[in-house]
Length: 80
Image 1 (cartoon, rainbow, N blue to C red):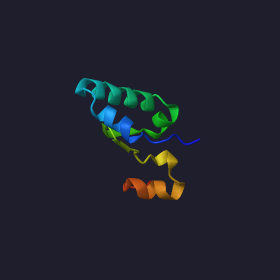
Image 2 (image 1 turned 90 degrees about the vertical axis):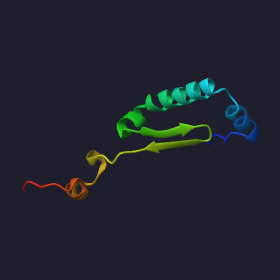
Image 3 (image 1 turned 180 degrees about the horizontal axis):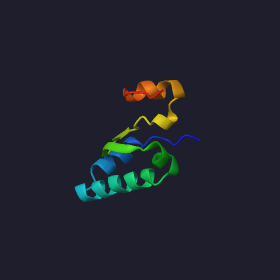
Image 4 (image 1 turned 120 degrees about the vertical axis):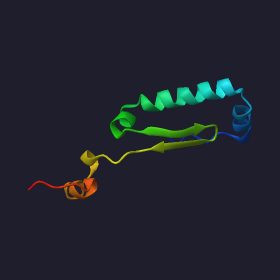
């Protein structure tokens, strides 16, 4: 089941919250997401979080690349 996006009324109410409440809400959002095992496995990093917009970085990890791409991914010397 896909969650519904916030209604315009919800977005307006959240956007009008005092800055301290908004900051706390964004910190809570980060904490909830980063507590998820999959987020920890993927190494998710918040780039930006504000009402109505969140940007998350997912670093490329060698362990998730196919073997042929691992050598090309690090651009270093491959020992053979």
